[in-house]
Length: 184
Image 1 (tube, helix red, strand yellow):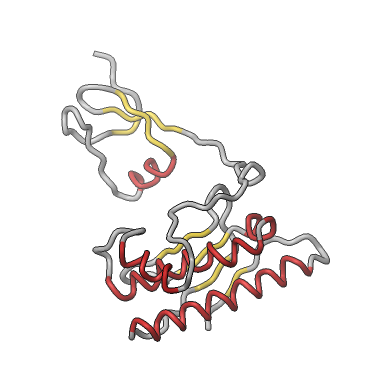
Image 2 (image 1 turned 135 degrees about the horizontal axis):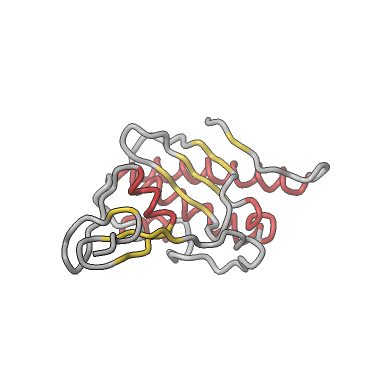
């Protein structure tokens, strides 16, 4: 199927290896089942176990990009039953909805919800796992300015700006620029 990347695991931990194998098996089974019912080729995303922080799972795809499903190994280990029953279908439904309907759909819209309901999973946007041990990332903000004021952008938006994304001020409609505003 696809290459899998396993998380850092404590030596001798057969539990996490077994959970990863079950997660991969369930992911591949749901993708095959969904593709059959939607009449599309079975997608073969790369399945990774390297997600950290608050998210339990993430589906990444787009034209010319390798499709990936990423899982949070800590949340998998701490919530195995609910994770496999809810998070795995959640991410598989994203991939199938994208493959069937393309970019124009809402991430948790009716197309995604229909796939979730077909599998008997609740079409909920967020998980309810305890993330207190996962929340190790501190939010950092970066200074930006426009013609009328100063702004603070998150790390995610800052990285998008570095990649070419342009953000406009809601007040003056001018592009945000890195740094603080020059003194007048």
